Length: 267
Length: 250
Image (cartoon, rainbow over the protein chains, first blue to last red):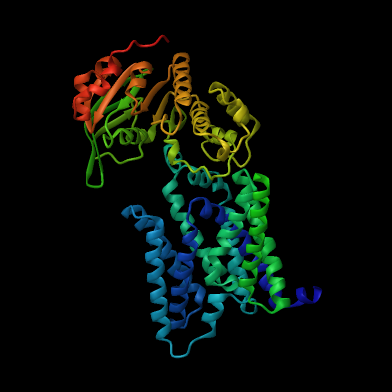
């Protein structure tokens, strides 16, 4: 274990992984309770489009993928608000658009870069100090929003009442979409784009099963995410498995455990 | 000063005109039932009073102010419970405390808890304080929601079809609670309902709406058969009973 912690790439992976898990667990409770689980998936595929564009332009993926994904997140929120279409429909459309653009961009690159593979599936070996800094910035941004937790929770439970109480619900919707977009892109290296929506959804869903209060659900989701990231990254190193997939499999195992606990409590 | 006053109020929802030229003056302390057919704009009127929908024409004033400038403590809104997310992990006292704090409580402070329990006692729901919302019946949830409105000691309560989704016993309990509270305070109540009978028994005034005002005044007069026929578009035989029973003692 000490040998493991001595490895620089492992240190980077663990720091970035735990930071991203804390952040995703925190936003995840809003995503799950607002019925926006599909949004994580949609944004992840938008991030794929952004990464592909960065590879085509030969730029650092993060710098292109972040604004690209934020733009898609804002468009999803805007079109949803204006069109009256269901969130899943609007997300489905932008999901496909960003994915199609990503494939077109990739097809224009003469040699298929391995970078794209590590971003699709996550790789602990490729987590750089830049990624760790990105994770720290994203977690810092999330902690700055802690004073807004009460407003977000209120609007999550009952949007109409929150609006009637003159809370800035629409501004908060946009803010949450932008923060989610940034989180999804920053977590891509650790978990991979394909699995990132699970990173947002599973800890929160598991926490929901075993808690009776939204504040407890938030704490449980954050803790659950962090433990799964720690164990998953360590396990993936020893078992020589892809890091993202190992973390998600552990989360699913934990979810099954919570499901059993909830079932036992009710019977 | 009127509690609620609208002048030639029109509201468009997309290309559909939901309210047209609504003139309404609600005296402070009235208990007004708003009724009318589906799509009559009843909920839209409440939403316009709350400032939740843009006004296409005319004006809304609440205690002589535009809705956006009204202190949020003075207005309480009870939405339709069928639209609520019962899967949200929350205890009843947290929901009531949210009406007191105007945000969701991370943990309920002693002061907020005291206020929440007091409000729950008013609705006969003190025993529900530490029950999760997912375990409440429709009637119990409606009581908790009512406590959430009362906890801020509002000057105006707006209720949107509070009887939907609860059984008859729950419904009569709720009307009794509202009646009691109305007689103990100088609160103004506006309640949207399909139940014209309740209107006759509990309200001081009725507003019959079908995108325009069909009638407004003391409940017995405003719900006269000719107006009901006009609003519902048929001979008001099914409603005649509503307008002729005795008002009950209060």
